Length: 197
Image (cartoon, rainbow, N blue to C red; front, side, top):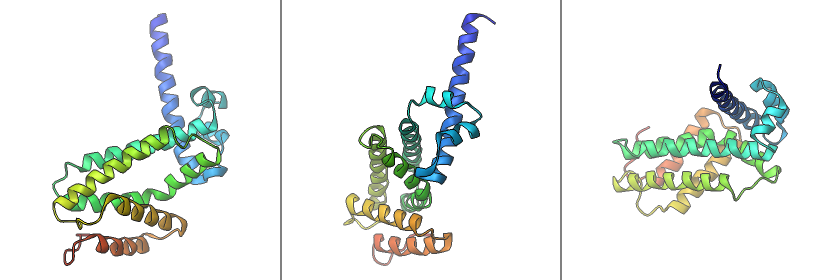
């Protein structure tokens, strides 16, 4: 193998390792939050701890990268839903998805805060991108009459955050969470026009 091919293979291995570390770290920190360790990430990813720190120089950098990637995936999901024909269903389904996803995201976010990570850095930028995409879904649902037009993004996003935290902290089962969301959605829907569930 030539030196050039060897270098290319090393870069591919490095990208593969980085992706595997992020995948495992998302699971580990999403489950364990502040108590999760980089040693567990390294073990489950099948790499040495030095490899983890070569990609992410600190535990905070690793957790922030995980959170940024999670926000980016959610934003991309929201942006893809902007092309769905039924804007109301797209909005309410995405709202439900964010609430169902909340426990893991909250655990990762709290782990970053505990590590004194840069909460005003890349994670904050990625979070803002998600909020904007959610806002675009909201506006589109309002334009079609699926969501009341007097509900503005700040209060709707506050409802989303509150509902997400309640579902995560109370460990609501799927049935209770669905009933809670039905009540919230009833409040967001113009009178006499309930969202299709």
